[in-house]
Length: 135
Image (cartoon, one colour):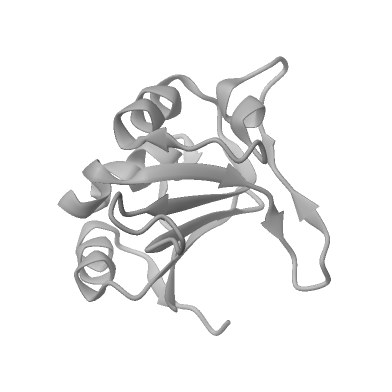
């Protein structure tokens, strides 16, 4: 899959999950989402949020459960910053392979992998600091 990186910052710093989700095209609205660890090239894996207590995202990570876009947006609105993690979006008609992967990378940037050209174009139009990924 082709990948781009979203390096934008706002007053709060790193882009929040809800900001990235809001920028996705209509296709994302009907998707199912799974939360899993971000996996480094060396195999080390993490799912981490900036939270002093329990949060919905961490509880859902690596359970194999999927949630609707509506549920993910609601959770993202009230969740703390995602430090490490991967969000896999699946079309309802094809639940075997995700159409999009959103990786939170060390509270620094979001890496978006997708074959969907319209999604990449929309993200590039929405955010200012978008870079082509080398990986």
